[in-house]
Structure formats: structure tokens, C-alpha cells
Length: 256
Image (cartoon, rainbow, N blue to C red; front, side, top):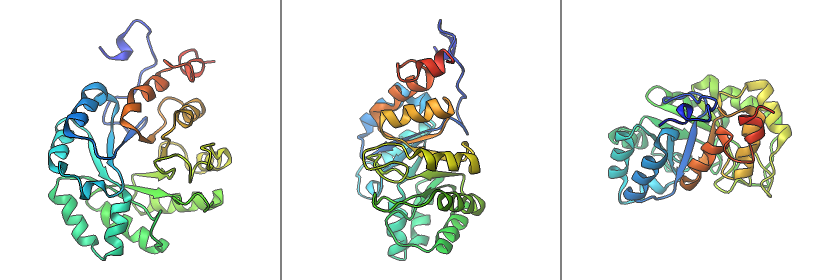
């Protein structure tokens, strides 16, 4: 039974395919059995599975797992680090062919590790946007590199104009860089500036930590797009979105 049909009369959540309230999950090398378990338990809430950084290039069950996710209606994207590796090796065309041969329809384009000119990144977004749904990523994986909010806004606007479907706010798997300080604290001034200049629906905020997820939901509502969610945190995140956890009950369930 869907949660919206139960005795609590919860606020509705949009169904899949979703443009808002997207949950983007990090798969660092799940077995096929574990991936099936994730979808059996939480498939209605999983929109995109990201095969983290370059793991898709070395796992031995890639084709089986892609077939499983496709069968169960979940889009798959490889981590942006794999694209950066292809760019560094001069193998972008080969990477496009590799993705196409596996039936992948989404690509992440980042420059969080590789030094890449803005022009080249925008060219890559435009190139891949012809055939793929593009998730571009803004922000550095290096916690020591802190960019001014106006710079983030400018880059996000450029990447959306170049053809990105959504722009990812970088946080790393740990949630300790980019959008956050080293201790995981949210850079609220940065996010407020992006919110007022860009809006919410065009963004996918990486938020691997529970406190970060709760902050975004309390600030922007249940249907904020959140990414880099660990597989075991998909159900806990959905309870935050529904106000079924103490962290968000007042704001979401009770409307206080």
C-alpha cells in the first residue's frame, strides 16, 4: 500500500518519473543480490543510481546490474570521475560509445578532480546532451578550495544553458567538501544564494549525512532533490521526506 493511502493521510509525493523530489543513490559496488534487495525494499523512492567514481569500469557484474536496474525502472549514471579519466586519456568518444553500448541514457560531467577549462566543460555538456540526460557537477572535492557563492551561481547558470538537466552541488561521498564545511556543517549562505538565483528544481544537492538531508527538507520541503544517498539510507531518507522521523515531523507532518 502506498504511504499516501494509509491511515495517516500523509502529504503526497510525486510518482516516478520525477522531476522534483529526486533521490540519487550511491552504489559503490553492490552485489546483484544487494541491488535487487535495495529495489525490492525501496524501489519506489529510488530515481537514479550512481555507480560511484570509476567503480563501473572495474566491477565484474556491471552488465547484470544494469539489466536489473533497467528492469526495475531505475536510471543509472557513472560517476563523473570516470568521464574525467576519459578526458585525461583523450578517450571521450570511446566513453560515449561505451555508455551507448550498455544502454545508458544518463551521464555525469564533472571537473572536481581534473583541471578543465570552463569552455571545455561546457563543450562536453553540449556534446553529451545530444544523446544523454546530463547531470553536471559544480564544486571541488578538495575541502581547501572554497569558491564564492556568486561563482557557483555563474557556473550553474552556464551549465544549465549548455544543456544540463540538473546541476549537482558537490559534497563528496563524505559530505565534507563543496556545499559543506570540513565538519559537515551546511554552508547556508552559499545555498541561499543558489536558491535565490537559480531555484531548487534545477539542483541536485549531494547530502550523504542525515543531518544534511534533514536540513534541506526542513528548508525547502519534502520534494527537494537529494543525492549521494547511501543504499541503506534510502528508507530513512523517505521517512524524513514524509515527516515520519523526529528530525522533520514538525515541519512536514504537522506543518509547524
